[in-house]
Amino acid sequence: MENPWEKIYKGVRSGERFIVAESDKPYIEEFLDNKKYVPKEEHKLHFNMMSQQFIGNILKAKVIFLSNNPRYDEDYLDQYLHTNGYKDVVKNNLRLTPGAKFHAFDLSLEKRGKYWSNKFKVWFPEEVSEKVRLNELKLNSPEEFGEKEKELSDKLDEFFTKNIAIIDFFPYYSILFDKKCEKLADKDYLPSQKFVFEILKERIEDEDDDVVIILLRGRSLWCKAVLELESYKEFYHVTSPQKASFKPECVLDASENHVTEKIERLIEEMKK
Image 1: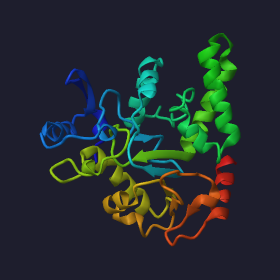
Image 2: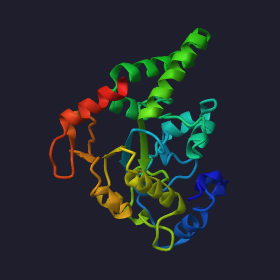
Image 3: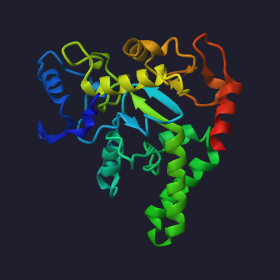
């Protein structure tokens, strides 16, 4: 399936930036133009920055985490707009270019940006802490961020990209996911959604691919969209979708059994 993010529409709607995959655009506009659709503030959709439907190399990462939607935040928007080169990083990742990388830690300086770094410190405390330190050094003391620091930062990016990725069920921002957005394309999924669903199916069905998939939230959504998930031997979920913890003791298999030792071994293997 062709990657919908190869063609991105950038325009203005209702006085705000409107950035969507071109193939998603007609369905989204029809949905927004429906007079019956009056969302609560927390469900309001925002299109004023590039989608982060997925982060990392979802074609090859050893572990994929599944969530609902990219969370909208004004502070994060400000960082997105004013961090040099970050828009290109997001675009390259969506297009899965050779330079695509796991960039969830790149804006790890404010509360919103620290969300993923705090989560993944449970698995990779030293690596994440060092990446955040280098980010802060680059921002606050760029004269001290030399070739040695860049080399180390690039090496950490390579480590994270090889091992982990995140996919959101719905590709566009809101504070909270609205169930009305499950299917917008004439009661079907958006092209951008179908794209990631197809990738997950292919990876699950590949006998030579032992990708681990960990559900953070939205179980009914994901299992309805990707039927192969429920029976996949490497499909797990966290104990609390409301406060998803990555601690090994908080990960369960499909039968609700704790898989602490398995996750601990997985983490150790990724660090080798």
